[in-house]
Length: 119
Image (cartoon, rainbow, N blue to C red; front, side):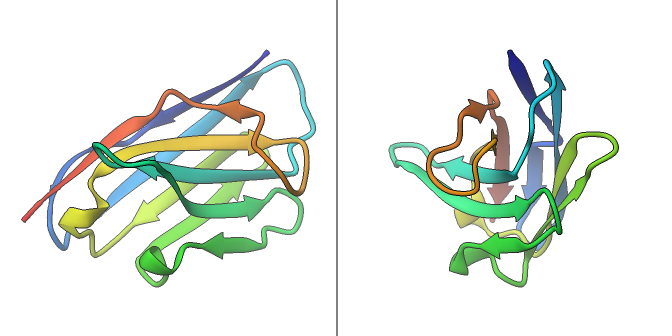
């Protein structure tokens, strides 16, 4: 079983920064990509950003381009999300996900970490 554990959430004022971390552990698996998703109260889970484990290609939702940066540390099996210029609309539970495939649904999910941005 693969475990994903997020950390780094919290309360921040608009314009501030946070850095989320996602650590993968458990049985060895071949990670092809990891991603971040978020879910605001009463809304569905939305894609935020993704990164290819080999090569490091990145993909972002339009709403976060230029403000959020995804990265990974392959030696530590850790993925990061640097969040700058945060807005109240970024308030959500943030989930990390991992997949052994390059496309399709993610097989593994973390429990989520709350990010709250006050105006």
